[in-house]
Length: 208
Ligand SMILES: [Zn+2]
Image (tube, rainbow, N blue to C red; front, side, top):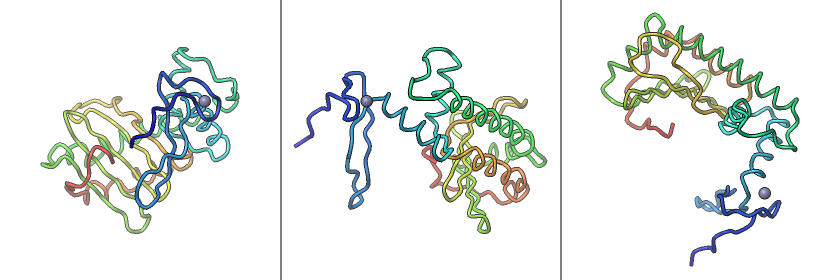
């Protein structure tokens, strides 16, 4: 028997007619839903997490984009200081992505050429020393690059065959500012090893 459709947020009681977020945990390798909450309560939770741990999630960055676009006012639960802190972090990460684009994607030798020449969609390089995995996935003229450490990851997106820089940007993140910068700096420092050793890998997919 399927669960009845949830009608109200378990935390604040708001109507869920415009959608909801389900929290869960893995029990016996099955997802068990523990709580159904509204988008606002989910937002408060991820900002509380950022305040506590500094961890930025893709949705945290998306919240910032809405704020910049003035489509949405800051939620009263989220302090301006915290938002300023996340803006500063995302701007620093963005600057480092531009350096990554110059030195790795368009580097010498360029990662771009390796990705363009590769006959599979996915490629992977694993660094045994740091435990960091570097993946690239090229499809429909777009390349997604993911740098994944033990507890943090960052994904970038760019146009596969564009010749000029300025197109690479953040696609996804689960990392503190420091973790994100460390992952990008690792890739910049190890760019020769990455470009020379990254191999086609059919297990790498768009969900990387
Ligand atoms: Zn709620």
